[in-house]
Amino acid sequence: MGKGLSPRVKALVRASVADLEPYDPGFSPVAINLSANENTHGMPEEVRRDMSVALSHVVENRYPAPLATDLREALAEWHQVTPQQVLVSNGGDEALFNLFLAFGGAGHKMVNCPPTFSVYRLYAEMVETPVVDVPRDPETLLPDIDAIVEAAKDAHLVVLTSPNNPTGDCIARADMARICEACPGIVLADEAYSEFAPAGTSSEPLLDEYDNLVVLHTFSKAFCLAGGRIGYLLGAPDVLAALSAVRQPYSVNSFSQAAALVAVHEMGAFEPVIEDIVHERGWLASELSKLPQVKVWPSSANFLCVRMPEAGRKRAELRDEYSILVRDFSTTPGLEDCLRITVGTHEENEAVVSAIAELLAKED
Ligand code: PMP
Image (cartoon, rainbow, N blue to C red):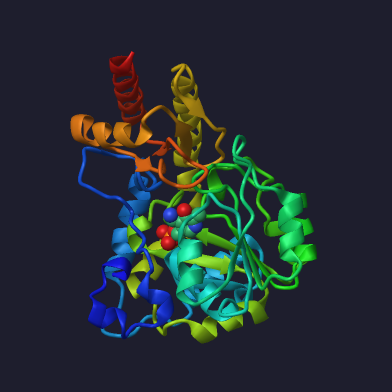
């Protein structure tokens, strides 16, 4: 794809695709995978049991409900909005892509706050959207809210990630309100990791006040369904209608709709899992911080952003010598020598801390 295209194909594809770098999750098979911010604790047993029953009742010879009616209604009830304020997608990624397809494009400025989730820029470029970067502070990695407000004033789309991937920080609700106020276009609050953040940090309550705000959620993280590919947006019905217009019909399959519906009905079962991940995040951060060569940024998500000498090499050594996979950000501008480590189970966290300590000790 992209840079690897043959000259013949390169001459045929649309210009914005010719030089695209495809998204690379950097996956390789390992014993301990802490690289993709999934829920490492796995589905609660009683939820898995009920999901299996629900899956066995799926009518597979018919197309799925196009707008995931039952799931949409359950999500609306949970978030206390109307079903018209909910749009279910094939993973959060599909919602993001459709957002760029509908609101991006040539001449439609998008504001991005790197370092952040690389998919925003990828989708923006795919549909010829001009991207204006408002970089984060190189030390704190926090976004520059005043500069975002300024840049938002003539933007069609502003994308804010809270907690941000890979830096882990949240955007204060008051700051999100300022940005919604300033922006004539759509403001996306990507809250894929919000279940791991302290109470009161979500921008959702602002939906009543700002009809240009859309909030993205996913079942891939807290709710253990990365394999099911279910995401959804909350927002004003007319904004979501534009996304319905560009989406592929039947993009969300019946099995995933059924599984996610069980997760919503049994939401309470995930609470202890989420609490344990938050507790483990604290443990992992404090143990890594004891290593003098390692800098750990505070995180409100299920991962930590850390800096250490020769991070790119350490990532390869962790994989090859310890069978532990973490994500390499050492070549990302602003994240030199940084790795992102997903919070694992206690045993996995112990393993990654002791492996990093051993690798660092070898260098002394
Ligand atoms: N937003 C952010 C910030 C993410 O990190 C991810 C997944 N890595 C997504 C959205 C999309 O998640 P999914 O497609 O699995 O719902």
